[in-house]
Length: 257
Ligand code: G3H
Image (cartoon, rainbow, N blue to C red; front, side):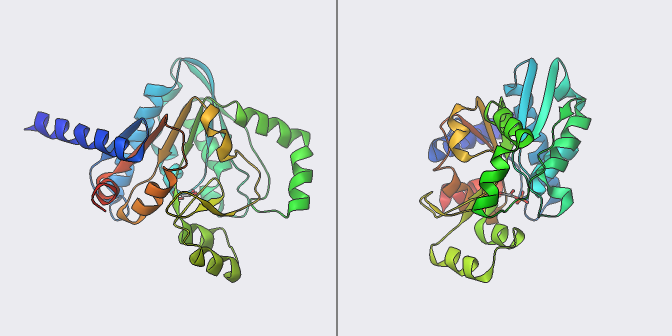
């Protein structure tokens, strides 16, 4: 019976990966929107994927912020750090959202849990174009961005466009613009429509999505029925070697929706 269930879920994982045009999907039981244990399972599955993909020796891991990433950080163990020298680098500045889910904080937790190191990227999340160009010239920031572009692995989540717009404090005008243009997802500061086309982009300091194809290991972690549409749209923008860790609720919605 158990064996049968396992085979069935592997079959669904393959079906989902094929539907999304990516290398691999891991699907955990439940709906992580509603069920904390499903979220924890998704986080644990993510650490298993990292452990599987990451080579021994020195690596940098670029990490984004958000509640899903925080959960992954919380369940990380020494296992990941075994035979590895790891440096966790925040993939974006992230000042401007609540401290506990900032990429800086998450990179630091991950480093502590795995006996690795972390590097900070202190830059405001959302800056004016003039400030942005100047910040990019700062040696400390420049160096961190170079490290990010040469990272071994990137770990991030995908957000619902509207929820992310509110969390990132976008003004009413931008919010209604996002609705008009049919934005459904946000990741890497890019708001996209169901076709995966960018409808709005935040000028932000950090790893740009255009670098994903050259990063050896790309892992997205996102689940919950509510995020199904965001996941489906976002996966149209990623390189084929991307791995997705998700849950049944999102998977079923993507496959049947
Ligand atoms: O850009 C996407 C967000 O970081 C996802 O945040 O994990 O809190 O839903 P979340």
